[in-house]
Image (cartoon, helix red, strand yellow):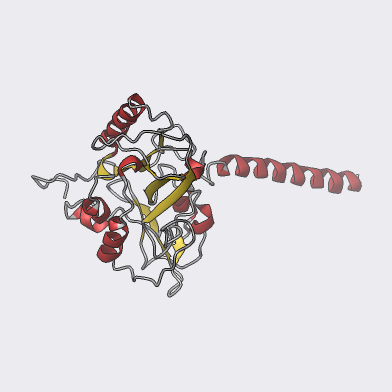
Length: 281
């Protein structure tokens, strides 16, 4: 496959998402496109009470989740910048709307992949993390391992499921369904190195327009997950969007834990030996 000519999505290159929440209009086209392409059954959803959010969170049957965050208005008379692609939250008399399409982060240090006992979770040639349902035994270890609460277990068969970055589409040289369906290009797909450049430039543009709250999330390779494969430009603190402020791979400390346990075991055996052989003498 790597020898094919004319491909725009090349194996061996890490790909991902950059979601610019400043231009998200909450249309949910990404949610619908994701379900349609991946054959995820639609659900009877009721409003959660969080504005127009009716999916609630990511899970086995919601691989994309559009959050609607209503916040009290910060300052009366705050201007709205209507410049294209440099939007600010929709403002009403009393509150602002912060909207964002959440998805699996496809972490560099993926704890879900580390704890999977069957090899169901694997790293693809495009850098994404995918669940192979035919190998998943439904143990559920990956569910609590994810620091973002992304993975869920399907109620029908008990197997884990999450975003695949449309692995089948990438192999066919097609971008993910959600990015293709997004009408405002809030969700951008591409090589991760290029997206980091795009994200930094857009952050600088927003900040130059006076949007001082703007910040990037998941772009730093030095963070607790080694950098995400899905980055976000946010207009407020991460926890406002339901994202952990300082995510950390839950398996990152395992080597040190095992070393400490091994030392303790050695010390215990040595102590028992001293007691037993010392008593004989």
